[in-house]
Image (cartoon, rainbow, N blue to C red; front, side, top):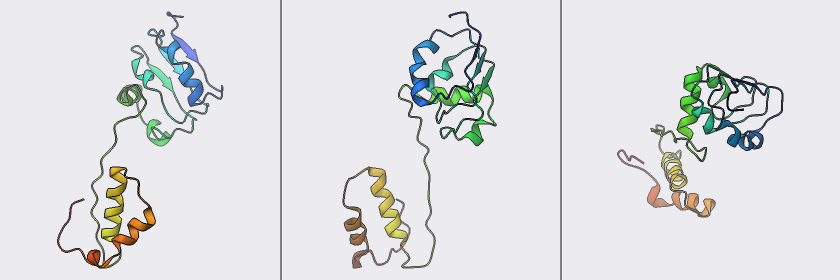
Length: 150
């Protein structure tokens, strides 16, 4: 198995659980050059795909990929897919993208409420959402003056 250089696993209905159970086997496949995982049920790629040093052909087409999105992965080279997989780390949770938002609109339409609600989600606090959003509609939040970065 350690000298295996081609592995075709297409059309096997392999999903996340199946690919995770194969992870120990992939540690020994350092000579692998061709890996075909096409036409399966993969929704995400495992981190260990980034640790295959000789891989030259990696087919992940026709999978319902969400992470990375199938439309993006279809355009990536093998090196880019491996870089993505390495960025996932051991637990499979990759780096979180950061987004900067600017809320622009007429007064009294809920920009402050939306900003505060998103800030609450970011802090992962547990509160009664309805009560929290109603408190934002109180007179003290009637208008926001100036620029508030949240």
